[in-house]
Image (cartoon, rainbow, N blue to C red; front, side, top):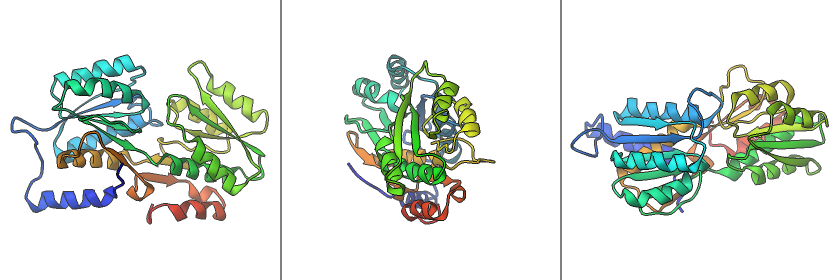
Length: 306
């Protein structure tokens, strides 16, 4: 497992491109590099990684001249495996999956397409032509926990941590952040399932005077419910205009660019790269909505200038 500071990697690599007069890189003589992207949510939903992942893919196309394709709303492993096979058969150079759905299908499919590099974002895998990137889950959860406890102070003795069961679990870091602010606060963990209604879940906790923090949702309708009724909504996605709650957003433009540049450098398969806050892949908005002591805790662990 490796840790790297990718903002520096990107700056150096791009400088080398322009210094050598190369505006666009092609790995193959017969045409541009082909990049495929698989998403668990829709590019039309601004509160999901689907929206940010798709726009990051388009940014790669515009900046590096790659040929792109994508599939969205992938909700089961059989469908994921079918699509991964399709990209392999079409001889895509780089195929990226964002979300927990793609780990096992990639490990199953990758050995059949040794000339394709598969990249899984969000976990740790090991295969000859599979590269994975682990997000700083504990740090993200910690930031959300500090913000939740600070934003929720004197309003409730309890905080409900709610997330979609298909998403990454940030609970351990979240609990640490809450307890650091207030060791007496109780945290109730709730994983949303397909048959849970958003409004019903929120009403349940609000009726018991429980503050709410949300992480990694796949529906904008849940934000509307939380935005009206909850003390905090921290999402790894979502617009920030006019927000009345703090937000934690992954910079997918930077993330996909570093994945692409590592691919060009010939990053080894079977390798996991552990991302950290120093890679500057997080944007935190709404810090001015929490009191100074809690804001200072978060600012102290973020890279300068975030």
